[in-house]
Amino acid sequence: MSRSKRKWDHIRFALANGQERTARFEDIAFIHQSLPDVSLDQVKLDTKIGELSVSSPIFINAMTGGGGDRTLQINRDLAIAARNMGMAISVGSQMAALKDPAEAKTYQVVREEYPNGVIIGNLGSEATSDQAKAAIDMIDANALQIHLNVIQELTMPEGDRDFSFALQRIEKIVSDTNVPIIVKEVGFGMSKETIAKLLSIGVTAVDVGGFGGTNFAKIENNRRESSLAFFNDWGIPTSVSIVEAKTMGSGLSVLGSGGIQTSLDIAKAISLGADAVGAAGHFLKILMKEGVEALIEELQFIHDELAIIMTALGARNIADLQQVPIIISGKTHHWLSERNIDTKKYSQR
Image (spheres, rainbow, N blue to C red):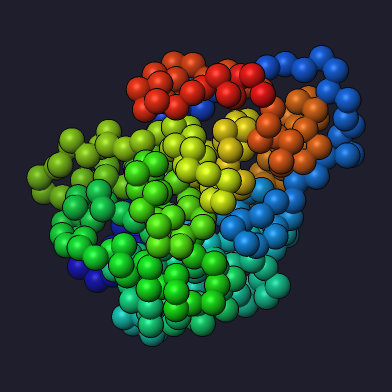
């Protein structure tokens, strides 16, 4: 099967399967503040994605590219929406264009539509530093995601089976490139052990890509003759993964993604410690069903609601929102307790 056909299969199955909604944000509750001492017009949403300053804590996460004209149009529309809102945007894996230069236009359209935007490139951990440089140059990227997708590859009928030396390749990309490197999971979450390894080689930003959103194990199982069903429920929920990442120290920029759809999801992810929050599947569904104008309206609505939530909590900025008291309960509390992570530091701050 061609890469182009596989890319389109991923989009079709992602839309058909929908979002899992099992990221465990229902386990997070804000403690009501009757005297927030802030007005809505004082709330500021600017933050940092790694070393990059952005005007919104929400970014459009990696989705597609390399699938011909259909993916070119999707990326054009996503870039238009990001430009209208001043949001950062990541493209899908650019390996397709590195193997077939005719596909480069399906990624370059993002920079064409959003010449002054924060645009994040994307490659898998199999990439070499030369390929990373080529991907950055292709779209004049401000940063580069290196995605980790072991479970997806193992489930994919034609996927990779050898994951040796991935950490060494990422280390070389970090040392050889001149833009921030963000290491990203694709829906299965990151543990603190994984993040410790990444910190040891100089990575300073991660996107936890937690379990609970688009399920790439299910997508690949839909493409298999014999299902590896045990991978369908495999992974670390997004709420848990953000906390595990934050335990690794203040020098790490943590991006939260995986099953995030609403302004409340975003507020909770930030309160757990995320510096910014990415969404993909929810935005793609709106774009494909209702068009780019509807997506822009949804993005504006989410930003407006986030500011309202922050006002209710007395949070003037993203740093304040990261310090509001919250209660962690349910399976998230159980998981964190078993991992020897003290949840009282969230409720007592």
